[in-house]
Length: 216
Image (tube, rainbow, N blue to C red; front, side, top):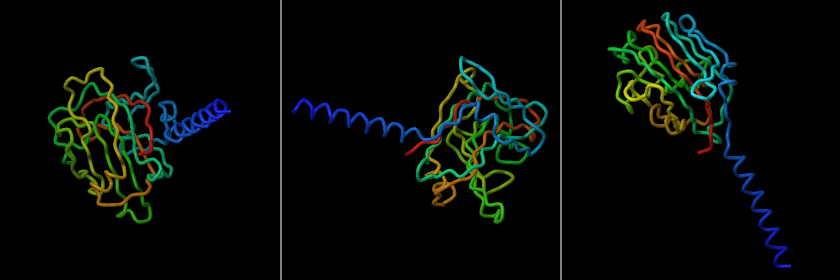
């Protein structure tokens, strides 16, 4: 009887563990998913393509003719369930001698764009831009040169020791909205990847891997 109880308890524990693992998975968007997101143009069209590089699937973004467009996922994301965003990216070359705090330098080889968009009350829209900066120090932040309600956050910076290397980043969206916008955010309704070169006129390219939304 005791042995049977042990087996029963072990089986129940296994079920609980599997359930916990599934609950912790959150949502994943592979490059094959991301390439199907809506493309929005601010200036021309950056080239996005699904490729295989370094033995993995990725989105290759190439910006050569002063373009600025991104791939947007427009759906409600519950930050009480999945406040953490995780992504991987690779940049081999950044922009040279630019000032990213002004409009003439407002270009980024790679960025992840998280938006609480209010189409009817646009002054209430707020956004976080997790950028791979060319010149700003890693960890710094500043208002977007075109729209002050968007905050730029240099998650990574510069080309040094990055060529051919992938980096995985993780941020808590709720904490960042609280920190940079003084707002208790319970949801957002758009996420995007974007590579742009319309203001500097310089060329760049980047690669994006899987993006995940996770529990805290």
